Image 1 (cartoon, one colour):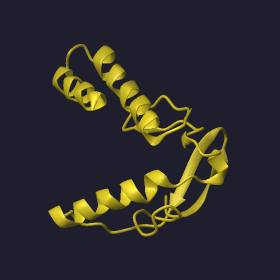
Image 2 (tube, one colour):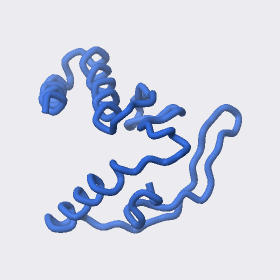
Image 3 (spheres, one colour):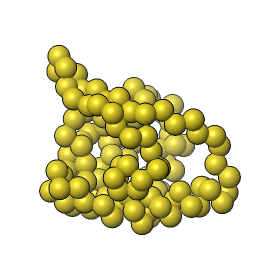
Length: 119
């Protein structure tokens, strides 16, 4: 991410797999809250820099080859032709797990997430 949009996120110091467990060590950034102006600038940079960057290692695809998590929830990973397809798959997987794994606890959130998917 740092190569695609320098300064937005911490630089990776080391990464790899040990004992079948992936790890990543990054620099620390002491970030404060975002103002309306700074959040707009961040969104623009993400859209124009990060989501249009194609690293050679990914063969022009978006996704992950190692397990990733949203909190304790394991994401369904794969490789996708566009960032939108990748985001839709990750969001859909998360919503499915919330919908089927928590017996109505997150119904309102799932409805909002499905609306986002339609847009």
